[in-house]
Amino acid sequence: MSQRKKLSILGLSMPASFLLVICFVFPLGYILVTTLAEDGPEYYIKFLTDPFYLKVLWRTVWISLVCTGVSLLFGYPTAYFLARTRSRMKNMLLIVTIFPFLVSAVVRAYGWQVILGKRGIVNQFLMAVGLVHKPLVILNTWMAVVIGMVHLLIPYMILSIAGVIQNIDPNVEYASYSLGCNKRETFWKVIFPLSAPGIISGCILVFTLSITSFVTPQLLGGAKFVMMSQLVDSQINTVFNLSFAAAISYILLFIILLFQFLANWSTKGIMNRVGGGGKRA
Amino acid sequence: MSYLEIDNLTKQFGATTAVDHFNLHVEQGEMVALLGGSGCGKTTILRMIAGFLEPTEGSIRINGRTMNEIPPYKRNVAIFFQNYALFPHLTVYNNIAYGLKQKKMPKAEIQKKVADFVHLVRLEGLEKRYPRELSGGQQQRVALARALVMEPSVLLLDEPLSNLDAKLRIEMQVEIRQLQKKLNVTTIIVTHDQEEAVSLADKILVMSEGHLLQEGDPREVFNYPASPFLADFMGFTNFIYGTLQEVKDGKYYISARKTGEMLVAGGNAPADLKTGDSVVAAIRPGNVAGVSGRQDDRKENIYTGRVSAVTYKGNISQVDILEAFDTPLHMHCADYTGPMDGGEVTVYLPPEKLLIYKA
Ligand SMILES: Nc1ncnc2c1ncn2[C@@H]1O[C@H](COP(=O)(O)OP(=O)(O)OP(=O)(O)O)[C@@H](O)[C@H]1O
Ligand SMILES: [Mg+2]
Image (cartoon, rainbow over all chains, first blue to last red; front, side, top):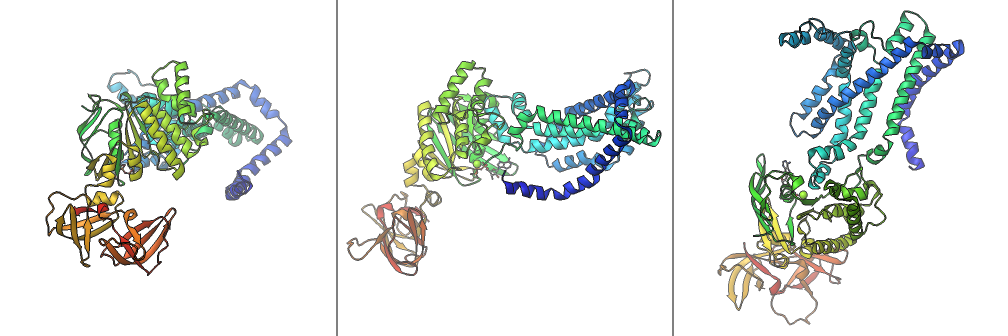
């Protein structure tokens, strides 16, 4: 990249960078410095040595991983369909995909409470068809949290992947067919690797949003199912220990950055090749 | 029985008929050029032969086997896409080896075959590059190697040379023709360019709006297009309208519309032409000759007009002449030294170069 191009990119990103520095980097740095100056690493040590807190951290991480995996599993086929359909309903389908964004997470969590509860639709149905004899306990377990969270976050996955698949030249698929690969083989050899950038960005988005989620675990996970954000909340609003809240937040931030780094690092090879869509006239 | 037989092939997209009862028989090892304007259905035909599109009607047979029900990955038809469609995530080597690996060919054999084709298309040293690290011409050659290495029963080339500069284009024409001959693969090449078609193919087909207009030997199609429309397509851009006065000794005497000038034409003409018929005579601009001074003792087909524009086109100049006939006359000269805009110019139209059609 030439010096000039670098400069112009810098220039274009100025407004956003400015906002980020003022509203994000500066307060973060301020909190880190003031809490460390006051209490030293005490609360970091406390968190990392107490099995209770470590358990919350572990739970938060695996729930987020499960949410990411489930979103990918269900989101990918939808994204592929959305990207490749020639139907005139395509725009309708896109709107339907984004529709959940119009309803707040709180409202949706309450909705799931009704659906998943002891006398909710799910249990009524399962009992009516005779699959179970007494209501299943779904609400206030990890399952309810995963269901609520996937519902909330799957559009991010779908849109990330659909955007990338849409830019894969359909002729590349046809070329693969004419070279002897059937649809399934073509998918694994061509479409899947070429959609890697969408999968990575979708996973990073969903993972980050899951690991920091608050409303959904609060309303669907019940009292025993505590995640990191809830810990931060209770330290601020019930225990009034701002330093500990800051330490927890920083540990969470570190985990997020670690996962992003791992995701980018492990897929560097493929991203270098297909990151730009692979088109060159 | 021909190797590739296409009968009554028809494709409808909703209300539009992209291909309309198209017939084509190609012999083993033959190279056929499919020529026609944009949107006339050339790509659609190739996509049906490759199996990506299902024909609305008609049949496709390769070596006696009906293809209609056979999926693309079992047809052994290789296609070269206009935009190359290389696999961006694979190296040159792996792009070329893609189909061989799918065939479960032993590794040593794959390596040898790929090396052979890399050599054939002159890509040595680039095997480890990714498509985005190649020039357009290099990508094109990878796409060609990827298709040819499969030893396909039929090779389909969709405008393989349209994005190249003039020099590389000529080189690649020669290369494609040599490869095709060497591998003796039955080939259909789509092109916009009539000269390319003539220089490459054993047989030419000209299409318009999904129909076949003319089919034949390249020379024949190039020199004797079957209709004024085809003549225009083949570069006969001068059309002179008139009435047939007399036929004598294989020569046709035509009085030109409006000017009444007598025009003698000797090219081929419809058999059922009668005196008094309205006709149109067509001639290539390159066959219009400038006449200077009185040194010429030819008496027929000498006309005088006014130069309206001289356009320099690289190796030739195009001179537009008005007032010789009621339609403008174009002349191509290697080095034009005559009068410029507004000046008077005298031209000669060789009778044997004038084709006659019913108007
Ligand atoms: N999937 C499709 N749906 C509807 N119409 C189509 C479709 N594909 C092609 N057509 C139409 O069929 C006609 C033939 O298209 P085709 O691509 O075969 O043209 P072509 O001869 O290859 O043109 P060009 O020289 O510009 O590539 C066009 O009118 C086009 O608009
Ligand atoms: Mg085309």
